[in-house]
Length: 419
Image (cartoon, rainbow, N blue to C red):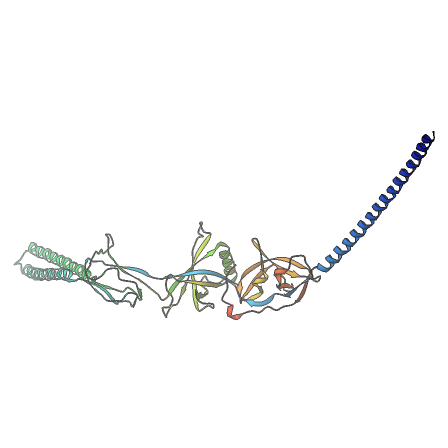
């Protein structure tokens, strides 16, 4: 009994201890959770403050850029093209008579003058032909002289009734036949002289001759009318004046035509020419021809200028840049080419307003003048344009502008290219 009582008492005491332990464990767990939540909240606040501080520390400053209003100058509006020189006269020297080539009287590449002897074909066969024709002419002249005297005697006899009218008519017919024989003989002489003269091939004009294509001793074929194959001996091209050929696009042709209509001027006009190794224009020419139709395949129209070449420096086949003025001098806006950005098929510049924000503007550009890009439209003379530092600026961003300057280079005035 005592044992039971003891077990019962012990059990109740043990049970009470376990409940207290559970209560204390629950309190400890709740306290730990609260502590963890507090730590997490404090950590999050610290991270937020740290991130905010970092964001403030890494915020980029406004980009420093140079700005300027466009440079204004009075410039003539002009069009630029790439042209190629060609000879006004270009001749293939071919023989009109056949025979053996016996002489060459020039060096390859020489400047030859009109009338200079260039080639000689063996003239002996044609001299023989000339002698035959001359002999026939002498014989015909003798027969004509005899017929003339016999006609005179017949007429005298008829006047004294010693001759007949029939005899006079017969002598008159013989004289006419004699005259025809003389005319025929003269034609043969001219024919023989033509061939003989063509044995000596002369320069048809002043120009530069190419290499000789046939050496002495070769037999050459000739033809008066070119109806049969002939031998090409050499080529010769004229040099003064010289043509400069170029093609205008349809848009440039329309600009050219409208400006000419405004000016009411003639088609011929001055063109400035810079050779392929030159910066500034060194030659001038006159526009003297524009074709009568656009080429459907290329959308261009052919034009040509005549250029004086008294020093014979310009050579057919060479290339040159052509500048064609289309209007009188007028106020033109200019910007550095680096300040103009390509926007697909268009162009734009970045301007800075009163709020110092980079704002894009689309513009229409022209050629380079004085090292600067011509702005045809889309920009006002008072616009402040970013001309330096544009690589670090994006449209819509804040910038820190400072004054810049634009310089016009007279040395590069003729070194332009159409965009």
